[in-house]
Image: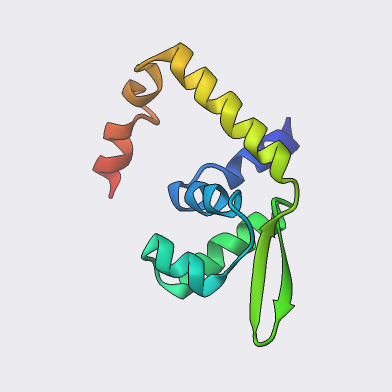
Length: 109
């Protein structure tokens, strides 16, 4: 279970989820992701480092930049599909969860 908890930690941040979703479209440079997410380069790099440490993304040099891609794109797409299916089955329960629901997360910001 510890490995599963580490894996899901990689998916636990909204910015990392957005990065993963964007990488399902293909490989991208940090500057591309920064523009897409409207986040600081250091923030995007921090999230990419987490995703790389979890084995979810890989990078390769391209000139002076690094290009990032999913290590297992089909599996990530399957996980997103499974999550969407589970969310459709649970209805509002997840967003109304008193511990992890949307209200709690937005209130913490």
